[in-house]
Length: 330
Image (cartoon, rainbow, N blue to C red; front, top):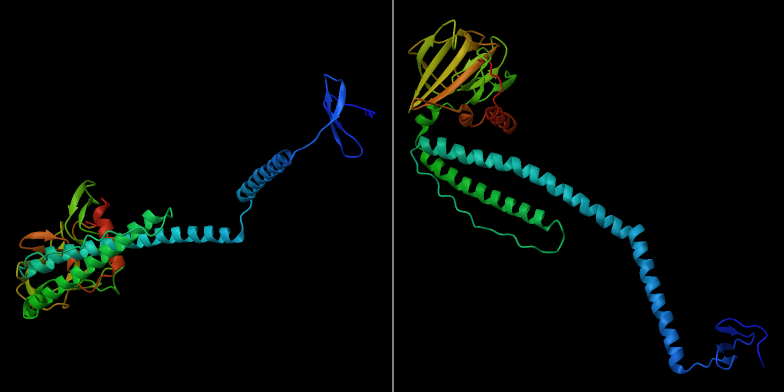
C-alpha cells in the first residue's frame, strides 16, 4: 500500500515503520535495520551522551565550586599569607644575627685578642615534598630557618669561648664602656645614630661619630665604664661642656653638650657613677647628650657596647638611623 503522504527522503507511518523514497522506482520502500545498524545507533547515542556530560561537568566546574574545594583554596591563601609574614620576621632575625656576629668579631673577640670564630654551615638543601605552586616559597623559608638555627648555634659556641676568656678578666670588663650613659627611664629617644647625616647647622652631609640621646636638660649622665677623668672642658662651640674618660685597655668615651659637669680631671670613676647633666651647650640644636666611644684612637659605633641596656627595638632604630643621612642634633 502506498503512503498517504510523502517527504523528500523518508517518512514514518503511524505503525512506526520507516520508509525511504526510491527515485528509481518512484516509490517508498520500507527501511530494515540489521544488528550492526542498531549497534551503531546505540554507540552514537552513547558518544553523544558522554560528550554532553563532559561539557556539563566542565561548565559546572568552571562556574560552581563544591564547599571542599572552596575551603581548600581559602586554606592555601591563608598559608601563603603566613609564609609571607614568617619571612618578614625572618628578615628581622637575620639582621639581629648578622649584628651579633659583627659585635662578636669587631668587639668581643677583639677585646681579648682572640682569633675570629670559625663558623661552619651544613650546606642544608631542603627537598620538595609535593607539586604545590608554593613549594619554592616553602623551600626558601625552610632554608632560611635552618641557616638561622646554625648561625645562632655557632654564635652560642663563640660566646662560650668568650666567656672562658672573660672569667679572669673582671677588671678589664669593668672598664669597657658597656652601659648607656642615660638610663632608659629618663630617655626620650635615641635621636641620631652613628654614620653620615645632615649637620643641623652647616646643612651638609657629615660623619656623626656618636649617638645622640634626647633627654630633658638636667637629666643625669653616668660613666659607662670604670676609668679616670682625662679631660673636663667648657667651650662655646663644638661639644660645649664635655668630659672624656680614659677607661684603659685602649678605650675612651666622650660626653658632650652637658649643662653641668659633676666631676674633675684626674678623678677615678666607676661604671654607673654620676658625672654630669644633660644640656644644650656648644654646637647643639636641642637638649641631648652626644656620646662617643673611642677604641685605640678610632671612633666606633657606641651601640655595639650596650650589652644589656638597649632593647632590640631601640637597636634596630639606631641601625636604621645610621643607614640614612638624616639630620642630627649636633
